[in-house]
Length: 129
Image (cartoon, rainbow, N blue to C red; front, side, top):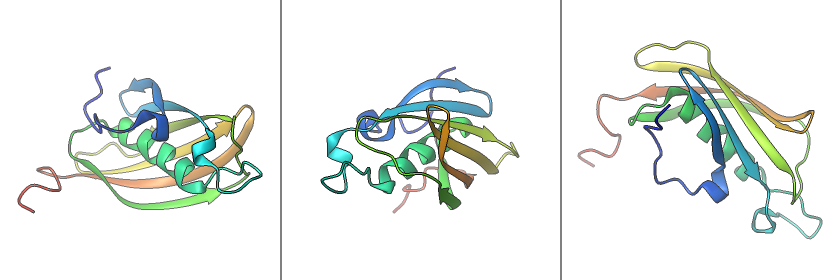
């Protein structure tokens, strides 16, 4: 499926799409040393959130999709070198409002889960700003 949103995103920071289909996506991210929050190699949660958010946007896959809210939980820490996969599923595919469930896994372990409330605006959110 053609990707219609977030075409200029830095995939080294937010992940590489491995699946994009109607109402679903999967995105893979390799955690690099640039993502470390400290000398132990703990990955800053912002990168994991960014991965999950990107997967949510791809599940809606509209040029004007924006994030309105998110309820999230970090379940386990991630480390430099981890390969994370975010899987997103649009639970309420409507015209304008979408509730997207996202889980991020490292191997068999779920490290993050969340519900992302996404909106499709009539025009790009920066139009006229």
